[in-house]
Amino acid sequence: CRYLETGFVEQTVGQRIARTTYTSTSHELLPGCTFYRPDGEPAADVAVTAFSTAVEAQTAAIALGTAAANRVDDIADGGVVLVTTDRTLLAITSGSTLLVVTINQASSLGARTIAAEVAPLLA
Image (cartoon, rainbow, N blue to C red; front, side, top):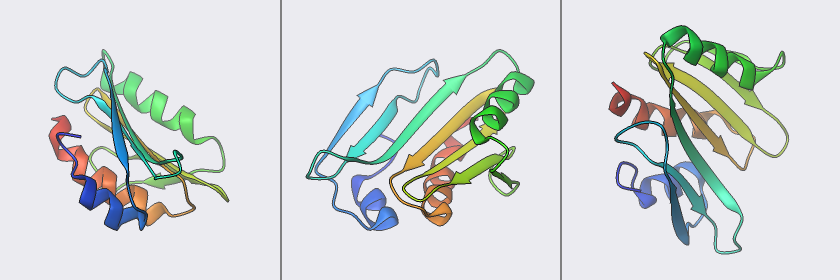
């Protein structure tokens, strides 16, 4: 992933990363990146979506969180984080861009760390 080092992701999620795939996104500069463990399970996924307006991006972020999500106010324009027993989904916005980080464990800290690394690139 050209904007997120594999070693950084390995240390953040505490898992070895064997390969990374890229997905085209609606953001001009940032593809989506999925980091896989040696057993083929995704350890972390970073998805970037460009919207027409900041309101549309925020609405999409909040919708991903459901009622069980907690607010995120300390990364970019904010959003939500939803922690379940087997994964964490963090959705934040920067202007009209939505950043979604999903990791395969119940750790909002890991998802926040990845989001904080990527968010400055969205501007």
